Length: 625
Image 1 (cartoon, rainbow, N blue to C red):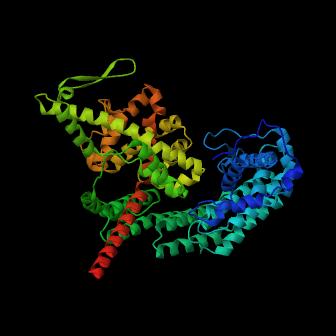
Image 2: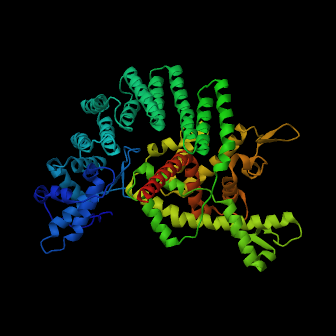
Image 3: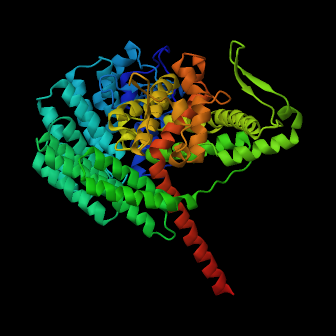
């Protein structure tokens, strides 16, 4: 819900009207349905809804002034704050247009900003005025003080993002007006006071975020916070909170790097890699054991050990364990499918991510980009072959946008078994391409839009899914990060250009790690990299990637009867496809690959919960009998 822009309307109220306006009653009476925390009602996101809802209800003859005031402040509260771009921090929701406020309104807001009692609203008004250059350094100072006050109101170590964002914005503003000034030192002091207060005992990532701020601005006692990071990491390991442990081993490494102790920093990163091995051990001890999740963990462990100087003996041991678990994990692979109604599925996709915490919503979205199920698509093609014999009997050709023949499919009733299989495969890729487009428009895009309406995605929110990822070479993490971020920003043209070559490179690197030769050598000894059209048809490709992922990558990227995005991209053909539903599906598949480890963990946890519930129900039935 976004307020109307009062940009072109006359001003029907005065500064005194604003000063006497009862914002607090509107904010207090507004029921914000949040599963996170009651303090979420004290954010501009909630204020926008409260003000715009109130404005819609004000239709009486004496309601012109309060309606206009609600409209103005609801409009300002609707701005989305982008902390990754501190000098251009605001945009309108979803469309990412730049913000503006007409001069008379800006002057009026500048006149009354000091009189706004609510710290969150005061911080937003002062910050926007500073960004639009309608105020001076005193306005920026007011925004800093107000953000810090709002952070205290929103302080919640369990639901920590809102309070941390206010401190981070205050720090950005303090650095802008004077990096060596009193306000910068005061804001840094707030960060350090909060760290001392919690002393690493906050349940999630507030301390991690606060230390990240100190590192970003080269502040804080290196030895003190390196010790604190290690303390948190060790306790997280005791609690089997492996993600938290990894994050704090990583930030401990950053403290040591800042202090010039590169060797200790590498040891901290090796400790982070070892948490994956410990987490894998947890998975195989479960009832039942989950070897698929353990395989994902060990792949991350291998990547970390290789990158940060793990001993060859340790790498070999983990590799042997990985091979053992990979063999056992094949028995766990299952697929479930069914018919769906598109309208109902759109609503379900939105409902699946609506009002969820950002990380949970992103993982839910990633689940929607799973590879196409090869066996099920083959079953459907064979069923169609039985029902539509004439269509499969005739020879067909695939034409491009210029009417040129780019692929040929033989009859499915040919004498040769190879030709029959070619016909079936061609129809499988054609059908999967249709499903990918449908999945993108009916599921992925509606869910994506809902997430971006409720949250502002920042690069930092995606870092955990690209960093130390076995699918992503270390020197390509930033490219993947930017590609995923482009999709969340709605720019699938940029996302396609970034992700298609990187997926190809990732496949090549993975094959290389499995001992495959990924180059061709000519008679003169000159070597060239094998492209995706060769790599995906190597005999070992199915064992390495699995049936569904291999089938999806072939159809999406290189098969002519599929979408063939890679070849069309590389040769500049049909570039409109890079902004189509298939580019959305490509982006979602990349998101899935980056999130697959975490998704595997969630699936197992849900399965264990379901089994526990079934056991309790059976016990109750026995007691009743």
